[in-house]
Amino acid sequence: QVQLAESGGGLVQAGDALKLSCAASGLSLRNFAVAWFRQAPGKERECVAVINDLGGSTYYADSVKGRFTIHKNEANHSNDLQMNNLKLEDTGVYYCAADLRGFSAKYFSHGDMQYWGQGTLVTVSQ
Image (cartoon, rainbow, N blue to C red; front, side):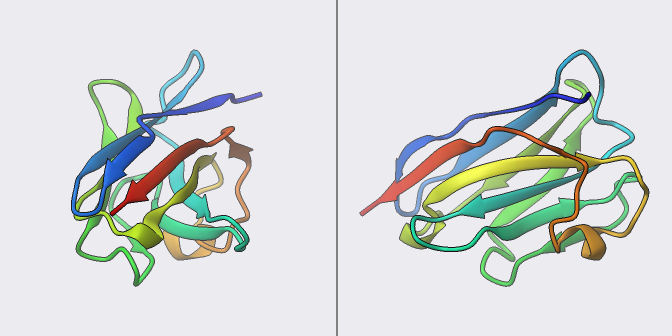
């Protein structure tokens, strides 16, 4: 069983930047497709960003394009989500998910992923 752990959440002000990281217990995420989802209070979970297993394909929700970047952290064998120019509507619990099946980033954006983390809270205030 792959255990994922997110880190880096916290309270920030609108316009600030924040980096979330996702690591797998005891192994590297290098060969996994990794996605970040978020769930705001009272709303359904939505996909924020995905990177495929080879790192050559990404998907971003329209709401975060140009502000968020997902990338594989080769040095730490983890996955990072760099979030810039945060907005109030970016508030939510952010979940990392990973998958070994080799599907496209677009496919994984629908939420069918093998492994999930417990989530980390990001709160953006004015």
